Image (cartoon, rainbow, N blue to C red; front, side):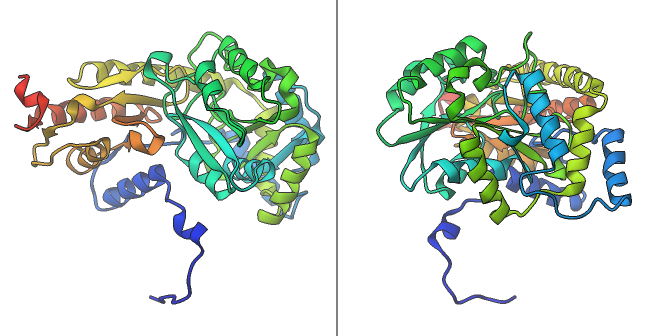
Length: 415
């Protein structure tokens, strides 16, 4: 091993690893050792990329479409994305208002770098995707966390938003459907938030709509800008192909917004990443313009899995699942497990203790709620087959049955 004696930057030393990726790494390591881990921590669909999309990607290689493209994406893909945003999301954009990148995460970083100066504040409703605070910090901003309450469906309310906006507020990060809770904002709820933002003309909205195709409400999730069209000049919509189109490994995302902000975003991406993969863009174009029936098939499959998971969790003593209206995650209150000891004698004092014990003693991977800004909860994924979900539920139930209350806990004295 080569040991470096030269100092590292404060920025590099301050960046925290992704808790979800770390749990997946730990679970994969145990699986390599022969352990049968039920991956309820998964953050990607278990469905494979559609065959016609894969075939298009392979055909792109065969016809030598393997060179650099424009830094902001190919003209054909940007035209298809503009058409998709207009027809499916009711967002009035032109191809030149669209930027393509190597995944949604780098587009979020570029958007934040474009609108933030050092010390600017960004409002983030909690529970939140684990990367938001880190990305804001990387861009020089200060995350301002607002707790979205369970009684409000884990959704940001206009009253809470108004109370947190201050002179340094520069942006709101808005995610719907929400990772990790599965909350989906209605049009009226978005409009209520927009009413507050109309009072603050210098505040941007950066939306994350990665889970738009995975919803269980009667109406598909609305894009923020489609509801608040008068705020279009300060809304950046970020989306991608990973979740709905099952293309996580292709690393392809896109963003749309006013040209005045999209041009600098494109310039930043040109310096940071060069150009997105030509092969992924060819496949993405096929995904947008080809047969879309798989989207509905996958959505209904996710609904079935959700119902199996939530029903099973509701029967396990001490767990309180929150019914998700979108995404493929269930956020579960595990507070009643705290203060107990596992069969191996581990005292559970936090949701981090719970997920560590589940991994090592029940062979279930999950993610602790603290990683999403809310404890004591655990996030469980239903992006795996029903048989594996049921096996995971059996293991959770047995884990609970073998737990015992500590004499220092309220669980013990209330028996």
